[in-house]
Image (cartoon, rainbow, N blue to C red; front, side, top):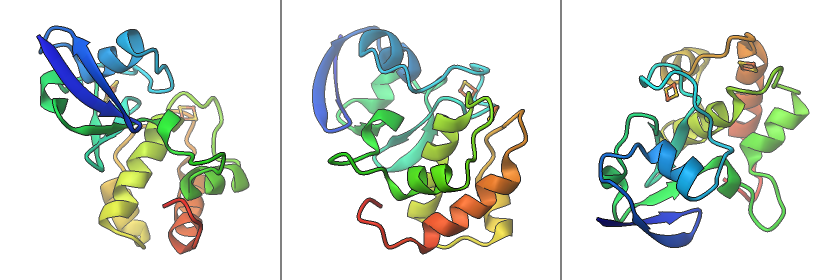
Length: 155
Ligand code: FES
Ligand code: FES
């Protein structure tokens, strides 16, 4: 069954089973390995991407649910060589430690800021449920506030 997805601005017709997880299609079929596999049960958020601008966990989302929709992965955030403002804030605050959770974190934060442009600490805690076993949450919170206040071109 051909499924059409628009990934990072490019349109792809994928000949895959409709129940293939979106994460598998991204990593194995399209070779976009920036999105990570953590738990496989929608618990950790390492696999977070945007689907029509909303953060989703791609390990449990069948590719059929993305048919005709726009998917944005970590590879698609920077535009014209300029980091997205969330990526830039991550660099400024040196957020990552091991880094494994971080592409999912960044995508979840981009999704959160699309819903709540200037979140409070409580809104960050409630809206960002991804897991970081390195415990980078304090630096992430500071970076999120900076990104929220940034007037950078990429939003
Ligand atoms: S790998 Fe998808 S939520 Fe953990
Ligand atoms: S930076 Fe290591 S799990 Fe988050």
